[in-house]
Amino acid sequence: MITILIFLIILGLLVFVHELGHFIAARALGVKVDEFGFGFPPRVWSVKGKKTVYSINWIPLGGYVKLHGEDGQSRDKESFTSQQAWKRIIILVAGVSMNIILAAVIFSFGFVIGLPTDISGGVPTGAKVRNPQVQILEVSKNSAAAGANLQVGDVLVSINGIKINSIKTAQEITKNAGENIISLQYERSHKVISTDVKLQKLASSDQAGLGVGLAETGLVSFSLPRAIYQGSSATIRSLGMIVTAFGSIIGDLFSQQKVSVDVAGPVGIAILTGQVVKLGFAYLLQFAALLSLNLAIINVLPIPALDGGRLLFVIIEKVRGRPVSPTVEAKIHNTSFAILMGLIVLVTFRDIFKIDFVQNIWSKIF
Image (cartoon, rainbow, N blue to C red; front, side, top):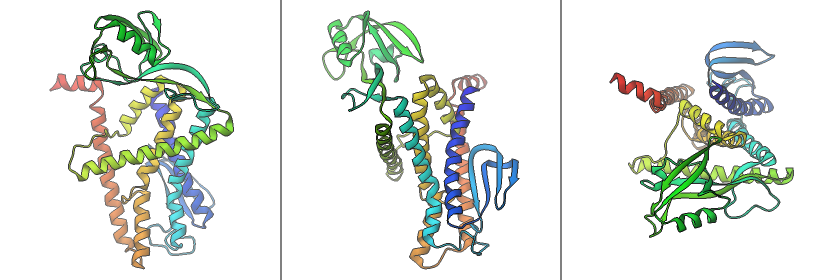
């Protein structure tokens, strides 16, 4: 229940900030906002302001800003469609911009209190490091680590009673142990687990080992000015990685290859939220910032019904010298929205059937 609540709070914040961007830009540029809604209908509660209806709706998985005249039926001076193209573009990209700004703010705040960071290559200038540890980043298939059920994210505590405070220490101990059994302690979800592991020869060399990829990590913090700089840099780097990931997905689709990136829906993200919550508040901050950036990138894609799709129609208007018929554009957006909702439902069902107890029930029935 706590996981669901945290998930809804994070999602609510991201959606609210996104729609707030559209709202502020529209009002600033003289466009009337008919409704500012959180969630999807049916409506739970609403209040009428001077020009805008503010509403809360039953399905808390999105939100919307209904701009006056966006359907092309009204052309008065406060109508969205009567505005110059540059004004419409600013309004359309304002939501995405706010999500990027929010991510930078979250990262910056995180670097003030300390964010988990890879310090294998050294500690950044001016940084303070707390809770340094050696963490598993990768577990090779059919390795000693895989056989011992070690997982990505586990923290090595000790090997044969020797505390692990660096990758070098872990490598030296396993190298000297050969293909023998070692006594291993590791931490997972704030619980220390002890186990015995028989080392195996590594595929990459003749030496024995656990078969894991390791990183030295710690909670890295900075002074406020430096934290803002680091937060902005982290936002830019993360945006680059997300864009690259989306590019890989699109490339795989067009090359008729199997899509290598696993796509999660609301249920999958909620489950992932629960896993991140167990790691601690600092990890939750990182997760929220990355979700905000993902929301920005998804919305800017040139898909009808999304901000990027509406932006595409403005660009088409500038190229053609005249707008697409409002009726045709509305039908395209509505059809695309229905398809997107259908995809979300399909991905949600897939995520549900990935849950262990659902799989167990399903296997017993069938």
